[in-house]
Length: 362
Image 1: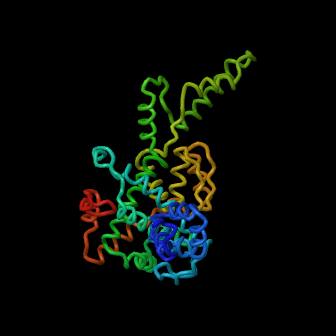
Image 2: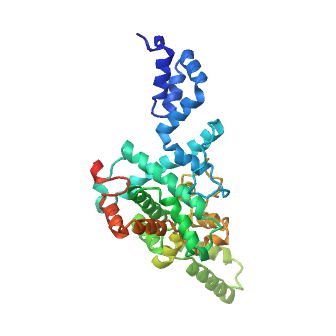
């Protein structure tokens, strides 16, 4: 029997079993009969396909509907299905899918690069769940309502812990695992140290006769060149400051890093407060991919990688700087309250027994 001759109920069941939205839309576009069946059950069928591709949508819904009128640990009643809500869920889901692509390269690197592989379906689900939960925590507690002096207040610490307590210790390990990937993205790509920039420059240009120097040194050299030209070449009009500056620019390139390892550490701690959508947007900006994310309202101007990040941070306000993230601390509080060992949990993540991609799944 041809598939078009099947009862409409069976065809609808096939639609509801599709693994993702593109497959559903492609199937419904194959003939007018299929398109008519999908049109009569469009919204519920689209939600089922979105759940299969981007689930769990229940947590993603808490992300897109979050506001300060209700405590974050109290789930809101599920809103009615709509195309506007589905569009927001798909945007958040696409961000999570980008982290699924980024995760293997940073999880298994260096000596462990031989273990690198794609995530299976269950691991992708765990990563999306962890991504949505970190996103929810960031929207709730990494805001201007929680400046630096509130991080050690007992009532604030209890409120933060209330959001994490319903989640099992194994699921909290998934948060820490993905959080470590966020940290590595910031450490190696978005906010690299001067040493990292110098090392990459040397690897990329091993025969470059001109070393990288700091921006402060470039400015100092320019000032010295100006003084030198004013003192000795004021009577020779054909020698200009512009020509000397061009020659100097060709001889030296400035280090656009974030200081030494200690300075960079505090920068990374501050930057870990951004949500996953903002972080992947920064990552794409500094690595050359400037595709806009519908899930964020942040406008980041292209240009110098360090300038991109500085422009972004300047738009957040004074509360953002010198105010590190609190997720890891809160996870530690919840684990200790359960009688667990945070260090043992982190060792399990490092060795692959805990987290998103576990050895038992290999």
